[in-house]
Length: 251
Length: 308
Image (cartoon, rainbow over all chains, first blue to last red; front, side, top):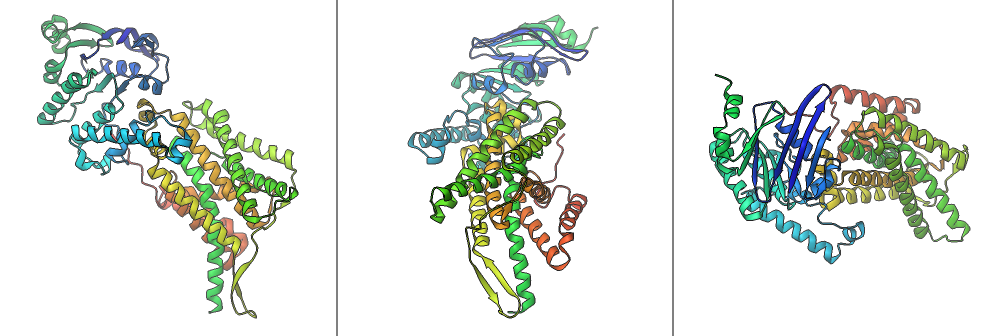
């Protein structure tokens, strides 16, 4: 569903990403790992339309998305989170989930002003979906607090819920376990697997927590200094001598 | 009632009247700033155009022999709002959107250009002289001793209060309850994230220009009628004052703009009454400097917390 071919991204004199290719199948959990500064997040930013790549091609379900405005990419069914939580802090969790469905309650000014039956119906559907996901991530009791005041782990879960209400086909998570305690990480693990199994979502993951990565990934790509180093199943990656060298240094 | 007291009340009333209009204009500045971090220097011109459209409509209706007052006022108000919104929408589309994403100064310079363009456009189309604006809402209540000082509360002032309050309540409900209002708040908090969630932020930004312009048109019609005459420079000082009001209240905050407008209007009125009319503008800008020195985020603005 996602095909990245020969992606490169240059910032001035720095070639941050060089010749990265990967392709993602439906209902697959695919992780990108690599040492700090390897260019993982840059790859993410290029795919999600945050950066415009300087070379290569990105196809998503048959659409060439490397030159598409980011809101249109999102509407094709690709959503992401950031390393730092980026919620709408001065809105409630419920409002966060409602606004994420803004373009789906597709309507014109007239329908909104006079609250036509079909408008009400779609607003209600959006509300139901929001409540469903609040329940799923255990935040229903906090639905009307200010999102900025939630605990860190709760904010992380709300972010994933906010992605899910948009009905994505591909979910991109940038270090979702960063800053979580072991218990929260275990819950996250379960949640991500459930997204794939129960909601047919493909997940592209950047993560440093190797336990999490090795446990849930179907395939893994390793990037080092902007260049692809290896790709394969968790077992293959674990035994790959190049990967071990990159992580542990040479003997 | 004591004469001093009546005099005080009169000044307060006058201040609140002008202050409400400042507040209506200030909302436009603050909403645009809140969402794209830009000061729209051409906003005062939109207010001026609103006043002209209202006046033209009123004159036109009079030649058509439509004189039933509520109808005339409503048609003039609605037309002024629609035409001003169209101007607001177009200027965003033509002069600001193409510059988005570049240097933050570029749209600012562009805004100054738009301001000159609109002012001269009206100058060419309508001439440079003052045009009388008929006071359609006549009459007043008077209080006090007929031989001493009499306080006046005109129906026009009452109208300004009522219309302003209705606009502000409607805007507050819109922002807090409606779907589009929710999206406006989200875009103001994190435009990039809103984009990545599939919200067409260009549309939301255009909507804030339309809303701000409509409110400015309301203020233009009300103050034009209250002062009794308009000219192409009409928007300059009012725009500057409303901008001051927006900063005073905390730029980016809608309740702040409302409060800032009222505070500024009342402060001006008291300065004119108790000090001298000459010091009116001095005091409003002094107030601005003091606020910037001691409370840079404004009366109701939240201090920026840089997240690491």
